[in-house]
Amino acid sequence: MTEEENENGYETKKKPSLSKEESRSLGINRKIKSRRPKFSRQEWFRHDKLDGDTWRRPKGIQSKARKNLRYRSPNASIGYRGCKEARGLHPSGFREVLVHRVGDLEDVDPEKQAVRIAHGVGMRKRIDIEKKAEELEVRVLNPS
Image 1 (spheres, rainbow, N blue to C red):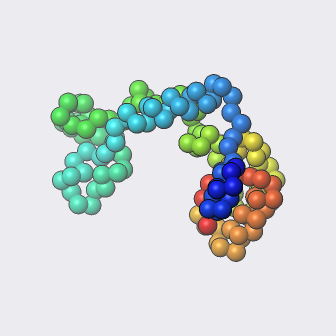
Image 2: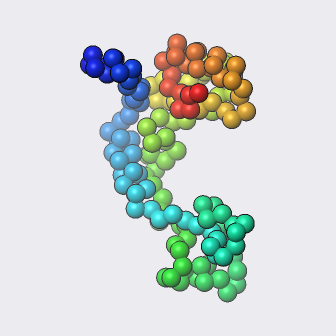
């Protein structure tokens, strides 16, 4: 890091150690994701209670969306899937590990895994987990 970065208070985030194949796959997945359409529920625009962000498979016998008619939004299918090597990886390249308590950090490999603190963890325990993660040099994906 340069002196300017330290003066501004910016600290570079820890990067994972990836194989060539995994880093290549991450790049491909990024490209695929940019081309992947946003899948929305059929007729979400017609009803206020339906959310356009959720995906449900169209099942009606006369459903135009199920028949994949061109004027309807595309259906989620296996053809939109990403590379196998990068599947399940966080966009940063780490594998995510869900943590509920401080003791869970002992099994984490800081080179390949990053920690996501569970939703139900309170602020006091969250601070303890973040301190311990800093000591072990483990990256926290959702710091407070």
